[in-house]
Length: 170
Image (cartoon, rainbow, N blue to C red; front, top):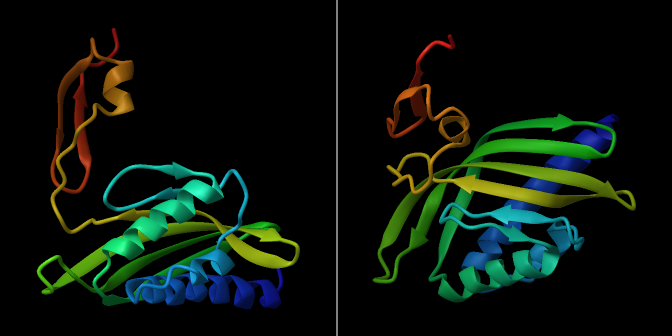
């Protein structure tokens, strides 16, 4: 990894948030420059769901653009790990978006993004957003509990993490 790659990945991360702020102003097209257009691209929005493939990912962003009434976000606590052709970025995103009534709603989101070096440029291939400050209703059973139902004593979510208690194996 070179210092050029470090600068380029950080520029790709910053470019995503510039594109996201443009989306809040009814302009989704800058996202086209940030993302890879490959079939393996993924997006897991904070609202739930999963999109796979560039066409599905961009369609989701366009839907969000259509619902957007404005806003602005900034990032902090950025941590980047760079390999030969892949890079991962984690950060906290703070800002505000306008709700349906036009009132500003403060947001705090933790996000992870993966980038791949394609033809000399770092392009986003995965993005996951998680609204970690708001309590979430869990609508599924975690895989851990599914794999050992006979040993599970208690499972619950404390608002931040899953908590499990299992019987010892015989």
